[in-house]
Length: 396
Ligand code: LMR
Image 1 (cartoon, rainbow, N blue to C red):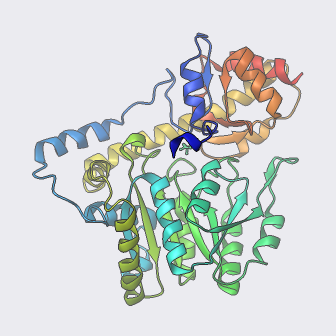
Image 2: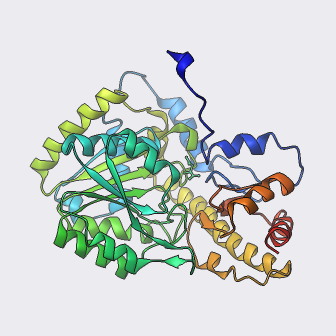
């Protein structure tokens, strides 16, 4: 059986980790995988996470099975983090489960959608996170695309998006990024969220919101504008969350999947199906990351510390955007890169071609995704000059 297999290329994002670690150039720069880095290029463990970990070690009493939904305290806390004191919670319309990371949440969403509707279609933004395509097709969904990023003008193609979404039939699922669009960094404004929501209400498509970066855009509440609005206006919304970035819990694999139904009784029925889906894939989620997040979110002191650490990460990324644009100017680049400062979250497209991306990797040891997506967190005061000069050399 195994002998018939042909080798597959490395994952377009994760493959960069290996290439970067094997490069001996002391000036190498990692702008590949979306992880937060400090000025020294490290991805630290948050102090609030360290404290929560100590509390957990001291107080954990058993490692008994936790069940397909995971830890209820985490599920409640993460739902409140997204929705606050929202009517949808008071009306008991949400059901949340813990999942193995945001990717696990998306895959569960895909399997759940397939269970609800065997011939389901999901619409993805063009472009979208490189893994969306693979994981929804693996779940057996038909994939279609709506326009999103205008590469020419480095802006949102909202007219194109809306025109295509207007053709989406009732019952199809539309994937939306809550904030910090991966890979373009272009987010919907409040007014644009209102227009998309009105369209969903009128035509009956169902939003699946991918919220992997809450707190990395404008702030925890600001980044939740879209999910809150949709939950208020629509009968059905699906939501995937991740604690990889905002809690820095990447390898602990903790995220959540929330379904919102039109009423509590329907939510209960849908939840029973959801739990059966989980049982047939991985039975139940890992518990460690969930316990850390719920320890933080149920302690006023740790929550305050987390808010501060999260703001620090968010501000550093925003500063890096300006740092790069200024350094490019200083390096003599006349092309306008100011769009980078108008985007949000971890990513932007540099807007250079594949060959130039390859040259940056081969000749300058600067690693980014083939689409020229850069992870802004990989920029620092120390490397930005070398980065800007290398980009200048390659695009001249
Ligand atoms: C990214 O887009 O770089 C991150 O979401 C990490 C990943 O799993 O691809």
